[in-house]
Length: 253
Image (cartoon, rainbow, N blue to C red):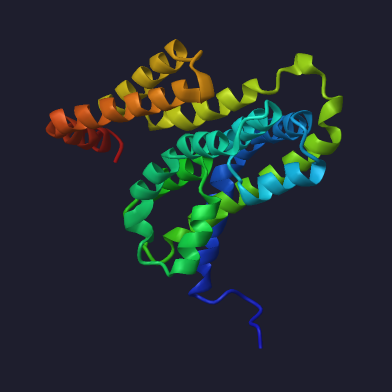
């Protein structure tokens, strides 16, 4: 018999799951135009509506889908297409490493599911949440599930809207700019220490200077630059970083 009220063991799970959904909702709103634009772009590149939707369902990686659709439209050979999308998504390996200590206790089916739901947006909210070490590790993955699922649902729906209605959206609206605003909203709250701020600044400068490189290599150069700068600064002054964190906690008990 199914109980009318949640059991004591289910309440933390539901709380974490709903917490992930709520944390992701502001970012979801910014991602809707992005998904619509992908739907329009995929059709313009020659994909059928079914193929465009299937790419969102199977690949579920916005930047890789954009680049992949554009390269399909230009007739790029498959090895180049595969290599380019692989390089673009290599940052997910860094995300997995960062979250690994909180997830490696899970069975394989959970890790496969969360790996599929891993996106920039889901990682950003989950990493901030996981910084709170008071949360029992038993329930942490439910927050990740909530954040990842709401992004997945938004992406599938916005892709479908873009496929069937996106052609009616005036180009003058420049909805693609909402992507930049979304990522700015993700990054800025996390720039609390000098290494992270320097990493973001250096990556931004390189991204602008290397924008004209083919196959989005400027994006990879920017990402690598930010990683190197952040790691070097953290290793050079770990005591300063720790004291900065302690000072911040003392001011915000």
